[in-house]
Amino acid sequence: MAERSPFPRVFWVANLIEILERFSYYGIYFGFGVYMTSLGYSRDQLGVVQTIFLLLSYTVPLFSGTFADRYGFKKVFIVSYLAYLPSILLLILTKSFSGIALTMLSIGLAAGIFKPLVSATVRATTDRTNATLGFGIFYAMVNVGGTIGPVVAGRLRAISWNYAFYTAAAAIVVMLFITIFFYKEPPREIEGKTVGQKLREIGETLANVKFSLYLLLLGVFFWIPFWAFFNLCALYTDSNLDTARLYEVIRGVFGTAFANFLSQEKNGVHHVLGETISTTGYIIMILQVFIARIFEKFRPIPSFLFGLFMMAIGFVVIGLAHVSAVSLLFVGITFFAIGEMISSPRIQEYITWIAPKEKAGLYMGSNFLAVGVGSLSGLIYTPLYGRFSDAGAPEKVWYVLAGHILVGIVALLIFQRVAGGFVQQEE
Image (cartoon, rainbow, N blue to C red; front, top):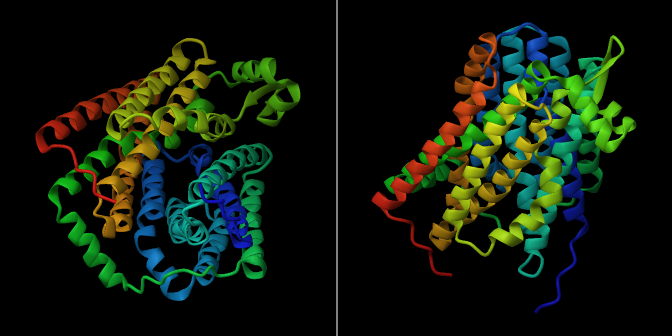
C-alpha cells in the first residue's frame, strides 16, 4: 500500500471554513420555523420560505462551480460571503413576509455559491492515497458545524433572535478574513466550460429518460421526506412536545449544566429549545464510521432501500413522542439518522457507479436536481403539518411521511423491475 500523502495547509483552511459556514447556515435554517411562528406567520407562509431557501441552496451549485473554475475558488468564496453577510443582517431589520422571503432567497443563493467550493478544494488537494480520509474529514466537519450551529443559535435566540443572527453574521466575517489571509488557490486542472456548455451537458444527461425518471423518483420519495424532517422537527418539538419533560430526560442522563445549555427558563421551569436537539449531526458523528463499515459489504440499492425503511420507522417513532413517552423523540431521531447515514452515501455512490467514467462528475452534479425536487417538501408538508397541528393531531404528519417513504420503496422496486437496474460502468 502506498504511503498516504500529507494534506496541504489549504485543505485544513477549507475545512475550517466549512465548519463556520455550516454553523451559520444550519444555525439559521434549523430554527427558522420557530422564528417565523414567533412573528405570527402561518405554516403555509413558512413552507414557501423553506422551499425558496432549499431550492436555491441546492440548484445554484450546478453552475457556481463553473464560475469558480473560471475566476478561481478564492474569488468565488469572497463573492458568496458578500452575498451572505448583508442577507443575514437584513433578518434583523426586516419583519415583513416579502422581506423575509427575499432575504432567505439571498441566503440560499449565497449558500449555493459556496456549496461546491470546499468539496472542490478537498478534491484538488487529495490524491489516491488520501482521498477517502480527506472526504471523511470533510463530511465530519459538515456535521460539526451543523450540530454546533443550531445549539448555539438556539441558546442565543432564547435571549434575543438578533443575537443568533449577529453570531451567524460574525462567523461569515471570520470566514472572510480566513479566506483573504490564509486560503491559497490549490493547483488543479481547469475544466474551462461556460455556463451554456454546462447547461447543454445537463440537457444531454437528462435526455437519458431512464436516468431522469430515476432522479425524479429520488427527489419525490427520498429528498422530499428527508427535507421535511429538517423543516419540521425543531418546530414540532418546540410547539407540540412537552419540552419541560425533555429537559428532565436530558438532565437525568447528561447532568444539569448540559441540560441548561440546551434550554431556556420560563416562569421557573426549564424548557428544551427545539432546534438544539432536532438534528442528526451529533448522531452521525458518533455512528458514521460504524454504519459505513457494516453497509460497505452490501450492494448499494438494497442498502439504500433499507435506509429508507429505517427513516420511515424514525418518522413513526417521532410521531409517537406526542401521544406516548416524549423521550421517544430521541429514539425516532436516531432511527432517522441511521437511515440517513445508510441511504445518502449509498445512493451517491450508486450514481457515480452507473455514470460513464468521463461523465461521473456531470451525473453527480445532476443529482442536485433531485435534491432540488426535495425542496418542494416546504410547500407540501409544512402546510400539512399546520393543518394537523390546528386539529390537535400534529403527530399525524409523521405517519404520513412514513407512508410516503414506504410507497417510495415500492415505487423504486417497481422501477428496478420494469426499467431494469443500471449497469456498473467499467473502471
